[in-house]
Amino acid sequence: MNVSHFELEQSIDAFSFELVNIIPAKGNSNKLRTYNDELALDKPGTYYFRLKIVDVDGSFEYSEVLATEINAKGNYGLFPNPSQSYFNVENKPDELLKYELRNSQGVLLEEGFLNSKEKVKIGENIPAGSYFVSLVSKQFRQIEVVLKL
Image (cartoon, rainbow, N blue to C red; front, side, top):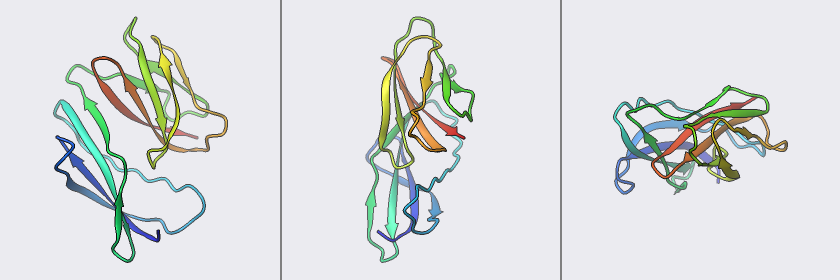
């Protein structure tokens, strides 16, 4: 593909998506390119996102749909952010969390399980850049954007 731009789309039901923002492509390259965008999600609930990847000829394809949960009572978190090697998980005591580390295209790079205050170690072969870390328990799913320096 010769990507022209990305269209960030959001949904509250995972079926009906609406355009949130248009992000211009940074040009063609064999190197990993990272993009970011910030949204104000102030209502508790589950939000679904996908990218519409638009080619210069007008053709397009969609990314995988990703979900994030906004909790009214405060979220779990990762720190320090940014980091050079690992992230500490801010977790409730005695709760088991599954984590998934994905790159900006949604490709799964690492996954595992965490106990209270355990460290998520970023793999040695993962380059600097922005990543998504999903934290999943029986009661929620949260996606954090983290930066590896």
